[in-house]
Structure formats: structure tokens, C-alpha cells
Image (tube, rainbow, N blue to C red; front, side, top):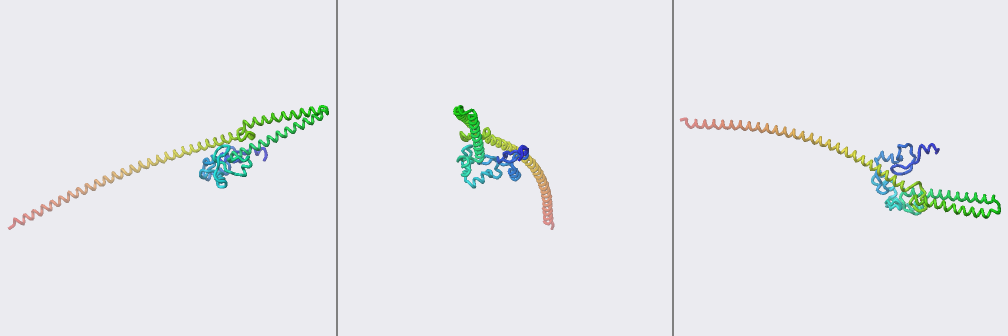
Length: 283
């Protein structure tokens, strides 16, 4: 890749799964795999083991799910102390036998690589200095050779401890993996922790936004239900009023008919009495 390509498409870590990928644009902060999962399953949750925001299905990320199936339940990471370190025996050989989680393993390997490069640089610098001084002593003449050689050796011995002390001071202020393996970029572990905290804050903000949306939806639903209840109540009252009115009218009609029948019965009874009295009085 050309320098322009590397500048235009730098290698960055995915906001969700923390895997390195080549960024196509500044607005693109997640890898293609996570982008596809977001479309399929929505925003991921923090994994219950490693706490990386990559649990699209259930409460575990795919990496921890696969590792659990292959290596068994997780152990406590010797570095970050989270219960997310799987016993990968082959990988432990590469990190001095330490039981580390995935993120801490990557960080540790970077520390080892930078330490190796630093030691190689120090060794090559020492050899170059020794060769230069030896060449100078030869050019200075035989009489001065022994004294110059002694001076050169003394200078090298003085030079190496200085660099070593500097190396140790860097180690003391650097990574906390071990006293002689801390030449990673400033605060590798701190960077990981800060990145995780940023992810957690971003996740909490998203969750808060989702909660607010849910509350708004619920309030909207409650308002709709209240309106529907009031409408149903008004309809019920109108129906009850109508039924009461109809019942009253029917009752009045029945009472009027009953009164009419009573009058007719009384008239018939009077007529029969008259007929009987007339029959009795006749010779």
C-alpha cells in the first residue's frame, strides 16, 4: 500500500468488537461484520464475559461464545482481572505462559514486539559504537592502541548501563505487564481501559436514548388508551342512557295498557252485575 492509501484508509479498531480494520471514511467507526450484524440484530450489548460491546445475540459476543465452546468456561485474566480469559494453551506460550484475555493478549504481544525491537536497536547501537572506537584506536597508532582500547571498552560499558537505566525508567512508567516489558505506546492498558470506558459511556448514552424513546412511545400509547377509554366510556354512557330511556318508555306503555285493561275489567264486572240484578227482579 502507498503512503497516500495508508493516510486515506488508516487501520483502526472497531468501536464494537475492537478488531482492527481499514477505515474507509472517518464516519465509519465499525467494521463491516459489525455493520452487517447491526442491520440484522440492532445495536449490540456489552458481553457478559469480556464487556466488549459485541453481544448481538444473547448476552455473549461471538468470540467468547466460540471460545467457551472450544476451551470451556473463562478464567480471570491476570492483567485486567475480568472473568474473560480462556485457556488457549498455544497462545499462552506466546505470552510467557500468562493467562490473558483477548484484548490483554494483543496488548502484551505489542509490548513484546516493541521490547524486542528496542533491544535489537540497543544491541546494534552498541556494536556500531564499539566498531567505530576500535577503528579509531587502530588509526591512532600502536602505542596508543591499548589505552584507547581500554577507554573504548570502558566507554561502552558506561554507555550500556545508561541506556539500560533509561530502558528501566521507561519500563517503570510504562506498561504494567512486567518490569522489563513495558515499551508500548503510552499507557497501553490505560488506553484499553479508556477505550472500554468510552464504549461503555457510548453504550449507556444509546441505552438512555432508547429508554427515552421507549418512555415517549409508552406515554403516547397511554394517551391513546386514555382517549380510547374515554370514548368507550362515553359510548357506554350514551348506550345506558338510551336503554334507560327505552325501558322507561316501555314501562310507561305497559302501565298505561295495564290501566286500560283494569278499566275494561271493571266495566265488564259492572255490566255482569247489572244483568244479574235485572234477572232477579223480573217476574
